[in-house]
Length: 173
Image (cartoon, rainbow, N blue to C red; front, side, top):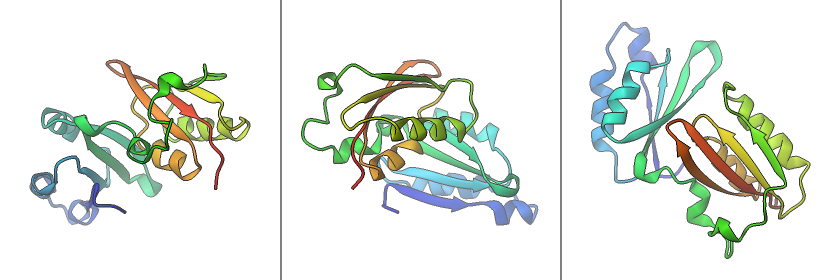
């Protein structure tokens, strides 16, 4: 991975009966400007979400095998999708994109269902077509997968927990 994400696995601490909060705060203090924190835990650390939000971090969580959880904390100012930094000429301004030909309402679904549905829909679309997707949270784990497959994405926060994501279908290389 790149330097934009620091991974902290607190599962061994939790399994030994320890308290990982000091280690988490130590890791947060070491983050560079714009850097995200990937946290691996044995449970969904809901109380930590409010603490991190006060520090200016949004989160995206995903349940892993055997009840473990992966949570990615991203600085609020860095919430734009990663593809924006590597956008091709003409892709950095979504206002020039065609009107969406497909719309998905992924609100109310649990991960990874929104990502699976989005990727399946893109497989049936032609290069250049635009997909409009609605999500309950910024789908941070979707953006690297889109970039890998040659697609571009632009996210717009439209409400407290509502995101509109435009995805321009590319062609996988």
